[in-house]
Image 1: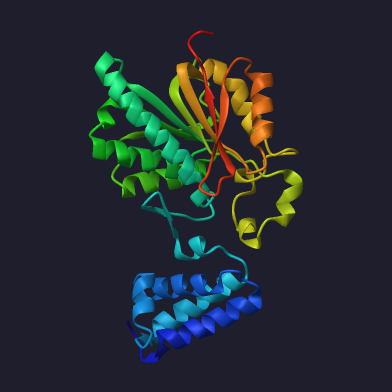
Image 2: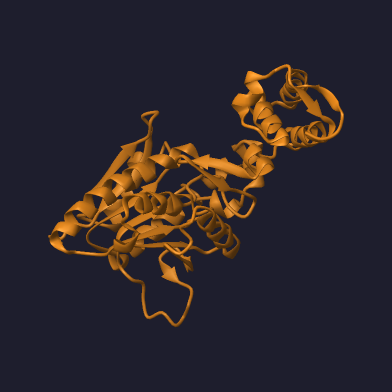
Length: 310
């Protein structure tokens, strides 16, 4: 803490909360706590435990600057430069979408399937297991799985790839992978969904697991999103007229990219459960599609299977 104290944590919190409430923030108290902790360099729990602690001038200046950025609508995650996801801290900025808590459900399902396949594949000698994270963004899904595999000692028996069309997003994903010591465990490639952008490639490889958190917001709903979303890449949110245009392009590529007995886990919007099943029936006849709910009981992940009897 540098500079002469300009007030206590409690006083600065009151000031910040009031500013954010006037600006219309629905989470003013939480936002102010996170920003004050970030400005001082301590966790939010420390802020709450020591309301009487003095705050130096430099930290107070950083806090007030962060509050003004938040009051303008900028997401707290971008201001802090960090977002927690699946028990890990990820660097985030405007190069990619901020990881959402809802996406943790996709990782949970993928983790359970990876564990199951590791057990059966090892017993049958069918290795490696090939996994791709499509539209990786900040790399949160692929990195969370890589960290899990590292803990299981299974990085050598799983082939893990993360792809995105945005070179900026791929750069951010690589930075996060290095920060979590799994930079060498994931192959990052610039692809348009499952289509390699490198013309030297003869065709896409096949994968046992395909994971995707792609844009699924309806185009006409984009103006109604919270103002914080306006700071994120539009291409990572806008899913076209019905919200499934990008996902539909992915479904069309599954027959040539998903191995027999393979699975695709695709995140969807809470109002798209029936629609994704209908779309799969049309584009992938005979492929089972089951929609998994999130913790709130809302449709969240489409589980699409390619059965070997086809």
